[in-house]
Image (cartoon, rainbow, N blue to C red; front, side, top):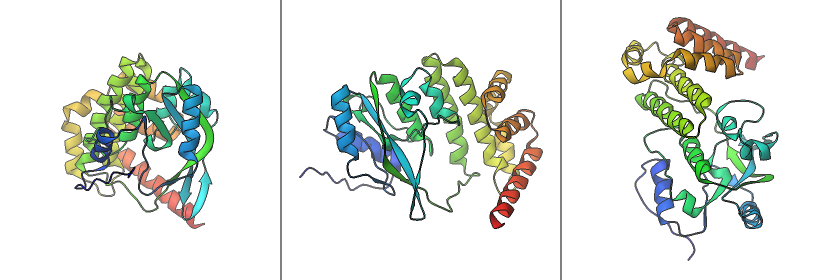
Length: 278
C-alpha cells in the first residue's frame, strides 16, 4: 500500500524522475538507479542524520560494484568537500576531493526537490545539474561518513561520440553551468566549465573512431560552440586543470589543431590497450 507503480513509455531517466517528483508525498525524496543497489540501512541512517541535524540534504559515501566485486571509493574530507565554501569546485574538477554529483547518494527535503527538475534535453550529467540546483536552495547539508550506495560499473559501455545528442548536450551544459555558477558568484569556475564543455563538444569528433568530416564541419560552423571558445576560458582551464593530457587537448582545440588532437588521442588509446595486454 506504500508503493505506487507507474506504467509509462520509456522517455529517459530525467522525465521519469520528474514524474516521480510530482507524485511523491513524503518529507524527503531520493533516487536509486535500476542497475545499482543500496545498503539495507542506508535510508535509516540518512533519516537519522537529517532528524538530528535538521538537514535539508544528507549525502553518504559509495562503492563501485564491478564484475561481481565491491571496489571502495575513497573521498578524502568528504564532510568538507560538500559543506565548505569551496564545495562547488569539487563537483566539477577532478582532484583528491572530487565529489560524485549523483542524485542517488543523497536525500533531500521534498519541498526543495519540488522546486527543481531534471533537464530532459541533456543526455548525460543531468544528475550534476540537478544537484547543483539543490545545493543553491539547501541551507543545511550533512554527511553520513559511510559507504552505503553501490554504483554498478558496466563494462563495454561507450558513448556514441558522433551522435548529435552529445554535441547538443555539451552546448546546453555549457550554458547551464555558466549561468548557475555566475549566479552564485563563482565567475572563475563558470569560465572553466564553459571552456570544458567547449572541449567536450569537440571531443565528439576527436574521440570518434571514424574521421567524420561532416561532424567536423558542423562543429566548426556552429555559432554557439564558437561563442564558448574564449581566451580567458583557455587561460583559466590551463591554470586550473590538473590533468596534463586534458590541458594539452584544451590548447590544441583552441588553436584548431584537430588533426593533431585526434592523432594523440588514437596513440594514447593504442598504448593503453597494449599495456593492458602486458
